Length: 159
Image (cartoon, rainbow, N blue to C red):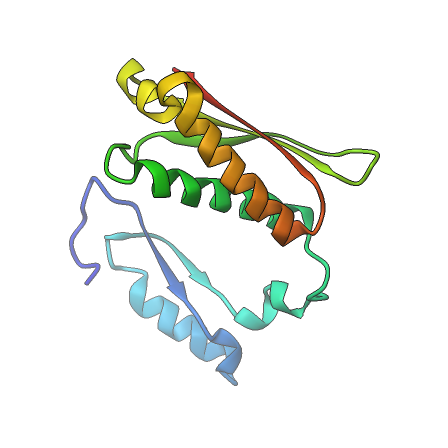
């Protein structure tokens, strides 16, 4: 493994659990053994002990970044529920705007970006029925998760 180059791939070698090695000089010896393998572009030594662990944060408080990711996942799940076989997986899904309003509610705007008008028509549905149903269901789930009102805006754009 790693003895042959593949011009279509860039490979990194990550050595994990380095915190378990007592003599750090031993790590250098191991790294030295791999340095002449042509298939690896770079080498990293990593330790999970040095990584910030989200599970160690207060479990009752969600960071904004986690909430944004949850909102994207929930909408994507509802999308797949409604257009599971019709939708190509190369459609881009983006968080466009995220605002906490004065009343404590959230305004979330997300876009689906398609490359073909036929894909857009599938996502939107007749008179907006499909994207509307996706939005309603995702909005209900987000309200339940975030324990506050959510104003979810979904749009389908053609690139």
